Length: 122
Image (tube, rainbow, N blue to C red; front, side):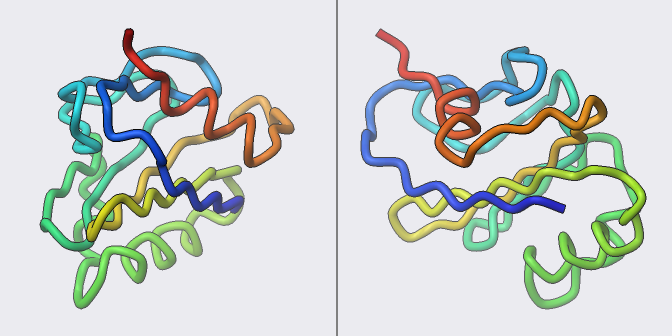
């Protein structure tokens, strides 16, 4: 598992993308909530606003007890044979977690993951 923490600076319009396939994820242009995934997307959840989308993955939901990060850690532990990228976005007073499969074992720096994941809309 690789985990990247992102603290976005801009609060303008943006789109979210799978960092491995560049496919756009379904979100509102000012929200980090993902409504439908694409590419190698597995899940997203918001720690503070209780938004949860397991990307048709019912397994992660059963790990949810006290916090999203605990559920993610348990899920990843049970899938340690898979190369899972976890992106944690700290935005204002909310924490969002996203999971993606790195099926091709692509080596990306934290900065490159951030550039590929969040793209400003002009």
